[in-house]
Amino acid sequence: VAQPTVIPLTVTRPLSVPPQGSPLFKKVFDECPLHVTSAASWTHPSTHEPHLILGAEEGIFALNRSEPEATLELLYHSRTTWLYSISNVLMSLSGE
Image (cartoon, rainbow, N blue to C red; front, side):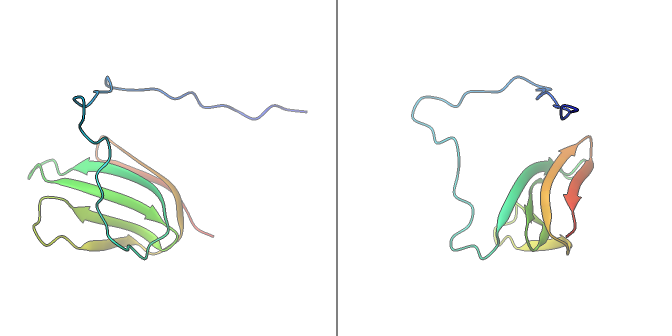
């Protein structure tokens, strides 16, 4: 029986530890109707605006965190189970 391939976790930059007493996570949504399965962050290369990319049962959504009245924008309409952003490329596992 063939063993499943294991992909090792690699860290491309050192993980920073927040100062003592600082929250590690921040609540972004209140009563969000999405069923979020994954998340990634991305910074726009020309404007340097930070974005939060969410993979959900309802699709892939983007949230510009620099806007005061931020809204979720639908990027892709199909169920997404995993996503990753690297070098301005968004990779995802999406579909039924």
